[in-house]
Image (tube, rainbow, N blue to C red; front, side):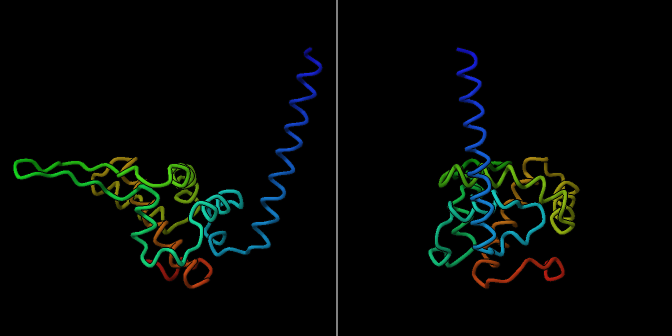
Length: 158
């Protein structure tokens, strides 16, 4: 019984390794500008591309931000105005999850995002809030790179 389960686990691990290789090959063949952003792996870049679909469906970066469900949610009424805002969490939960998983490596390996993250922290934002700002910045950059088919250049960013 245990030998049979061990053999199944090994088979599944081999299949996963093969799938990872195919994703990496596809990613290299596709040569997406997303992969030029430091901190984004082949697997993450392919996941983002798969979730976004055709970039021509998005005329503005705000549409991708809304699709990912990371747009700020403002709550106010005639008598109440919220001090803190959350994200909408509408749209693709898979894209949102992928973005939040990759944002820390992007911040760590990319001086532009690190500087932006530190700016938000110095403005009194919390860690998760600063991450959300970086995710939205990343989506605006991804939109631009895919629309113009340019490689990531940190010198062009503010």
